[in-house]
Image 1 (cartoon, helix red, strand yellow):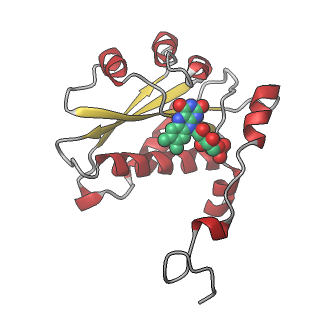
Image 2 (cartoon, protein in one colour):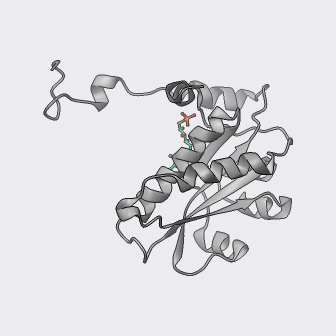
Image 3 (cartoon, helix red, strand yellow):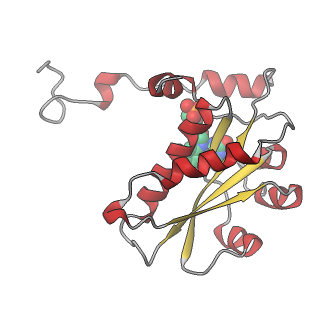
Length: 177
Ligand SMILES: Cc1cc2nc3c(=O)[nH]c(=O)nc-3n(C[C@H](O)[C@H](O)[C@H](O)COP(=O)(O)O)c2cc1C
């Protein structure tokens, strides 16, 4: 699968089979994160892979995170704020997107989750004070048959038109080069 195919194929999956993700595959995702760009190459990140059912249940307390209790793996993206105060969020997010793309190419589904209580997540996983929780990333094999709610959500994932979100040479100019 080439990168553009993966970009087209990816969608937020909220319904997963119980099939575990092999450790080697999870390590491949971590490797994709490790190779990501970062401001001044500081690499202000750390990734906690959570597969333990009790911990996943605790991570699923957020309003829009209920499905995490049924996801085989959740990767918690942490950013080192003191190491790179201006860029840790961008850097961790880029690493996260690299993992999303690698996961898609591996036939896995993912969902980026921002619905969490940071202090609870830090306490649960023993994340040091200086680290910030940037996102939770659900990773697993997507269920083929999805609920009506999921189908509606997926239908609603329409995108703005290209001319609404891009310009040529100056902001707002839709003319060609
Ligand atoms: C920063 C961020 C936070 C998000 N938080 C959640 C979340 O808490 N729960 C959830 O189910 N989806 C979450 N999403 C997924 C978005 O809802 C999803 O990307 C969007 O609806 C577009 O759908 P698609 O990813 O299938 O293209 C989040 C996405 C981003 C980028």
